[in-house]
View 1 (cartoon, one colour):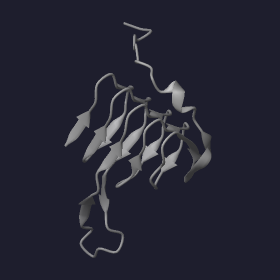
View 2 (view 1 turned 30 degrees about the vertical axis):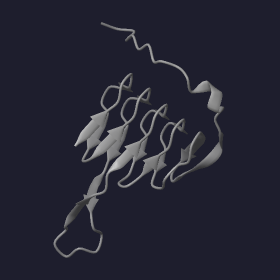
View 3 (view 1 turned 90 degrees about the vertical axis):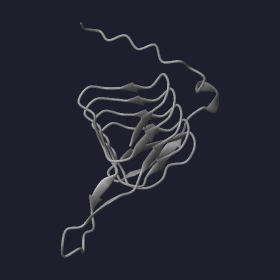
Length: 122
């Protein structure tokens, strides 16, 4: 099941696969992949599984990022463009890379905004 919170913007060509919960005031930018389904690597039958992805409030996921099964992204996190997130991320962390790693912290006071999305095209 896919659940998307209030005031959350999902960009163009974002793939959401499996069970994904996205909180309020989030931005998932274009060409990102949120994939909670995959296959067991050692299964002789290529058996699949689903481990839900949970994205809390005020999260910003940069362009072309990949979020893998079972990941929890806590409140206020920024995921840099082209990142692969394969582990849980703490509150207000800034992560980037493949695999992603913590680069810094976000100011907690900044997370009081309301996204006012207006596409620049018709």
